[in-house]
Length: 540
Ligand code: NAD
Image 1 (cartoon, rainbow, N blue to C red):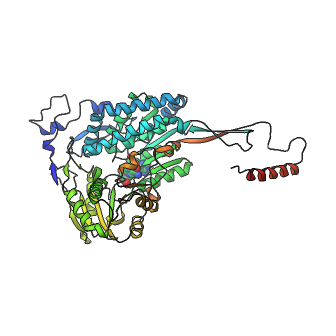
Image 2 (image 1 turned 180 degrees about the vertical axis):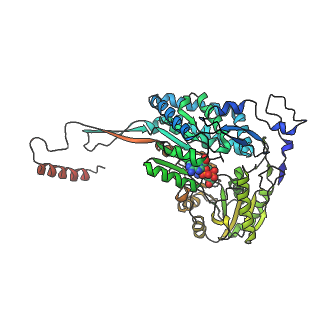
Image 3 (image 1 turned 30 degrees about the horizontal axis):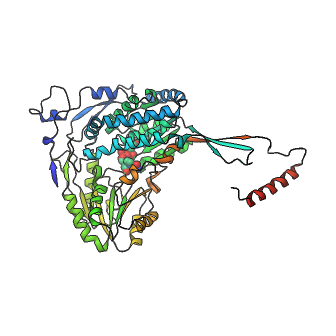
């Protein structure tokens, strides 16, 4: 593994007086005024603030004002008022704003990428997936707005005499609680269909990546969305997040399974809907007919993108016995060839973990596995020489059920290799455990791979690709089975969750009661004969 050290980092981002020649830390300063400009968007009156530090070098990036429960109440009041007007704004105007957002995100890409890397420590190429995903999502929903939201005719009970139409009515104010791992896209992507459908949003991004989420809020306003329609609050999930769950008309949550269960309970109490995008222990299957070079390249991206801090990342690699040795040789070689570094510029294949807590979790999983007899084929070490929380991409062999990393999500750059003898065995082992988020199958026989995919209990399955094929195909639903979640983002499912279906039926000539002086008994006979006739005529 080669390394890019911070001292080889980029030039200054700032117009200010810093001189990186004399003060290397100065090369790692944010644009002056950026933090003050962004944090003004947080609705917070406590007078308290929380410091944000960069995982690149541990340096402070700024302070984010903290919200109280009263601030959340005020956020909902403002959002509610804005939503009443917004729901009457023509759909084409709302869609046009999404298309403007698409252009803004592409035009201001460098600024977005810089901030994502500063706050998360991820490699720039992994940060790029975020504006890319927002642009795809914005364009998709803008161009399909009428398909999802227009009032539709349905069959009436009496053909020709009962006219039925179904309206898509916005839920009202949607609460969005998002995590730190994809701080730009996960702060915004679920909100875009909510806005398009006529809702307002109150959002609480994760404390570690507030600045990136606030840049997203600024871009929404610049695209034309009224400022009050998108309220941002900040603070601990246990208080500020709970205050959102207690008030929202619908909750969209992305985060851990443990927190997701709490959110679901809170929503059940108030009988409001929620979608939960949670964790995974995602399997990748290499079948015996796979192209091994492609599979090894795909497995590296599947396992180490965003340093494994990716809900759809692979943590279990099942490889056919016949090709196991040849695959492992290629996979380990490709892992060792990765360029590691926590710097702002392009060129790193993997960046840093985000926090000490993440480093502790990953280290604990690897040490536990080693202590119980697993072999480290490559990696296995922290790299404080690169960044405070850096951990090498790590490949384990000989992992057994008593080891923590066998069934628990590591959420880091650690993958375990397993052999399988036949495909039924591989599918059964892929389906073990409580999770069911994402899977991948590598084979040169697409039809066979798709047949295997149908038997894997995951919400998305990628054939000959790691995770991006499903994630970037925004017309198709994305989400988890079992403890990996409830509901789906993307596609029609991803926008209909934010609407109530309202049926409006207009009846003419015939009423649903005896007519022309007939008795109830005669009415029942006529209706019975009618039901039999309708079935004979093949009507639905
Ligand atoms: P987390 O559940 O601790 O936090 C996620 C968000 O929930 C944060 O904004 C946090 O402040 C908030 N929160 C915490 N406790 C809360 C509570 N009691 N009430 C309301 N809000 C609360 O998750 P994390 O550990 O920060 O994120 C990593 C997890 O997220 C991983 O398990 C990962 O798999 C999952 N994830 C899933 C997806 C997906 O699309 N399925 C995407 C990204 C991350």
